[in-house]
Length: 178
Image (cartoon, rainbow, N blue to C red):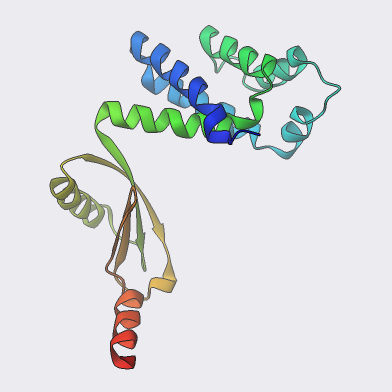
């Protein structure tokens, strides 16, 4: 059986090409976020896994939950996914679409973990310095992780900048053992 990322790729690329051609990247991003949120609901997952439900009924389930929130193209996209038995990979389709969208917009998603709440000015200053360093615009998601003890840990793509007290203590421990 193929990996979900392999299955999702052509659908994500098709949605991206359509959205990009129409200048509606943000609208499709919101639609895919809504669809992915519906797809993770336990009751919806059970329905998607039920072999007795037709593709039309499954598509109708998604469309009824999101009534009025999807464009005609997005509704057709749901129908195509249902007909091909691909509603279960909506989360992966969304993730790949967002990666394509971010690449087009020159942005990178980043995670900022802090030991304590940072005020918006501190976050903006840090993000500004990181954008200068990376040369790309960052979409930052900030989370508090008290296990860091102090400092910050930043994850940008596959790069990790760990300036936390926990990391520094671990490095000191390793140095003392050597």
